[in-house]
Image (tube, rainbow, N blue to C red; front, side):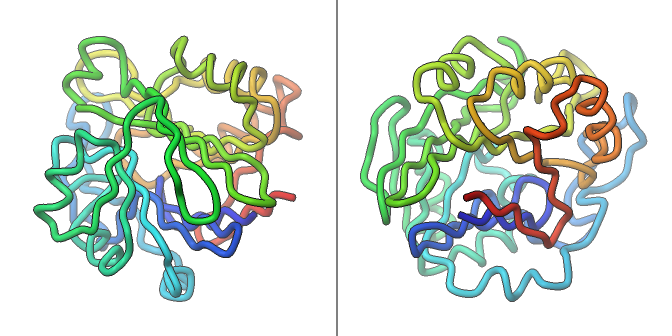
Length: 256
């Protein structure tokens, strides 16, 4: 298995003969609105461009996977350019997002939380994700994580955008994923609590994870203050650095 980091939450998962494009935000620098105007500097998103090998990474995509869409709006997990990158392939999604994705011309496969379904090369199980606490999760809209079990490959838990909840803890304890893909930017809006795990929850997640953690959702959005260097320092101080891979944009995390 290879997890090719592109930018933010956008990755290509190469495993079991599949090339799965997750949460494509493919637009140019500044093509999306700022997500914070007061708490953090109001800069348009994304803050950085795509890596130079993006076109090569997008060749041969066999399926798409969307964790959430913020009520169907162009966002950091699916923008207009990202939708074009998914043309002609089946796009797996959380059932509440299906109608909006169909309006964008996608060949959707709707999935139900907690129900294992067939997926090319194996199975996929959507699991609960909470994009912030009770109030913020309603503001941010429905989302999902996914557990992928592909033939001959490590099991992979894609947490989606979530804080550390009892549901997330249960996935780690009960499903025992070999690899976890975890958003680590510690995002916050101008009001309300965190909408991604703050650093203390990231460290607790890593401690609980049965195997390796791959960190992403870093350094691309103006409301995500945690950087790669900050994360490395925190992990080293906590003695957890050997459990976590932090790929640069355009680079793969190889999982045996």
